[in-house]
Image (cartoon, rainbow, N blue to C red; front, side, top):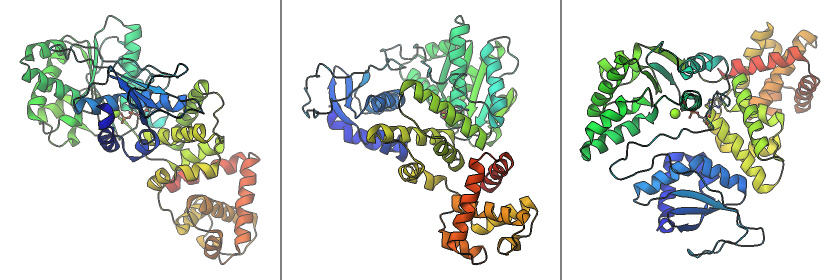
Length: 462
Ligand code: ADP
Ligand code: MG
């Protein structure tokens, strides 16, 4: 059954997971077996399988469940090199098959008691794995405070910021921390969507009292992506009551949304003002340093798990420069490189990275023009823009000119002859020489120049 539905399930997953994750991780999956509600995929490497189970297990289970099929566990199987996977549904597992068991689904559905289960937080999302930088330091500090579990100082804590900037990560970090240090506290985390789903289910099963009791007995309530309940009136009503009861009892509430309470259309005014009366902190878009830090910590994590896989520093820097949209995309790019490396068994070079990530890079690209680059560089070094095309060889002018050439080569898809034309009709070998010169200086560790270039790149990306 699961097998016949797989094509359909894949289609849905494509929509929910997005194109990148889908093509990298879901598309290559083949169903190996489905027995006793255990779904097993054939995958090329253990790395691949672990990744799929770790990251997409719930999405796969949920999608099946929406199609009326219960998947209790997701496993994978790595065939030995010489054997081909048998297509038969009842294929016996070879003795040496590598099976990885995933944990039980986080919300077990027991008839009649469907909302009494504990939420299983994502154990990867801890404070240890959260990289702190300027854009998120306040949110991080506030989350830390809540995770101490002491007296409630601000209620609610309202975290907001764009997609993929770490809101869910911070909320899970709070639960993970509280569940180890304050085991006596009853912590409940759920998305606003789950809140609504459970509420509707309680209505249907005439268990509204049980629902109310559950929520009113928690010590810490976290509701993720609250913008979801905009326009859903009875859910909002119930949310409002739950919220008030908990605040009155001085219980900590943490809420996240993708924007400020006041900016959520279709949210009742009384809820907006309630949400605003605690501490409202935003998570800003990442800057270059934070992206670099996140990538480095990811690389370390990978290396402890999959020794032998390496991605060089210049590839990491390249990703941090080029993928500025959000952390999820950044992580996605890095893991794709790892998947690629483990599939093809080749080390990732900059060229390979550009090729393998071309779709992601295209989306993240800001189209810079040669003129913009020349202007910014001229401003930065306080020279005239006409000096870019001019012929003076004075170091104070020639060096910035070379920097501009270098940045044009790096940040635009323009060819060397094209760049040469815009620098006063210079030959492409002159441009190449300039680009090499800057690379050399950066490589030899000229700190001022390197810093200037980082700064210029940032200014150009804004
Ligand atoms: P949001 O809930 O804001 O949409 P998530 O918390 O789901 O974003 O984060 C998306 C991904 O990026 C997660 O895998 C998360 O671990 C990672 N991430 C985001 N910010 C950081 C950070 N500062 N340090 C480490 N990982 C981060
Ligand atoms: Mg989230």
